[in-house]
Length: 180
Image (cartoon, rainbow, N blue to C red):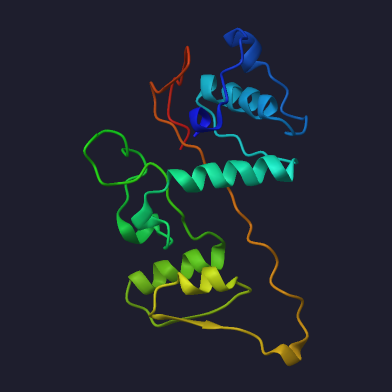
């Protein structure tokens, strides 16, 4: 994804990258590349909000374009689908995508897991129409009637998870271990 975004590894030493202070805000592509590189050279998972909404939307759009066409219209549960997130790139002929949508949030994830185990599941959560449409059909989604006066469902909370394996390269940087 970083390559698709045109983000390059920062030209800093490993010591400088490892000492990077993650307290600043992520506003530019350079901020994101530096923060990612810092975690990458340590094999660490880093969770940071991108404060530039336009840049984040561009990142989401770029990631969405990496999702194969037949996966774009559905969410995937890694619990149910059997997608092995740790070995996606081992088989170059694999049909497993390098990017996919995954339904998140505790309630939907637990609902999908329980349904996969054969339980009858009803979920009462504030989900967008898209999220509801991508729940397995065996899960009954309950919504409050308009008379309850709830505010509209907020914009979907999207998390971009960029995983890498041990030994993966980004420019001249090498990950010493996987981050997930």
